[in-house]
Length: 77
Image 1 (spheres, rainbow, N blue to C red):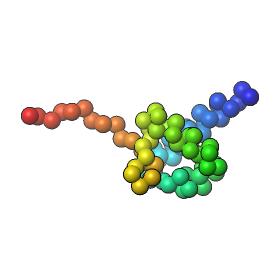
Image 2: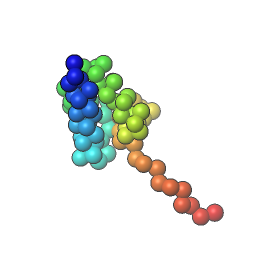
Image 3: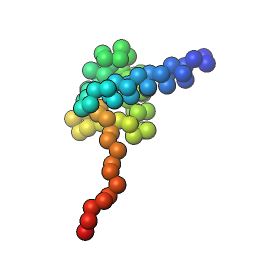
Image 4: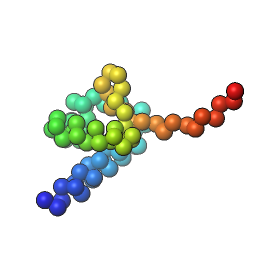
């Protein structure tokens, strides 16, 4: 089953690209499943992996959105 890791990475890249190409994209799990043609378990695994790498975050309403890198603290005291 040598192709599975490659397929997983390809799927993760496809989802990253979807979020990069659609600024402000906020999806529920059901919407993400439909958009990427995944079953619930597979979609959950991929979205959680993208959260773990800090590409996505899950909002309090359950929607998945792109995690914006935090700017360095440049505030003046």
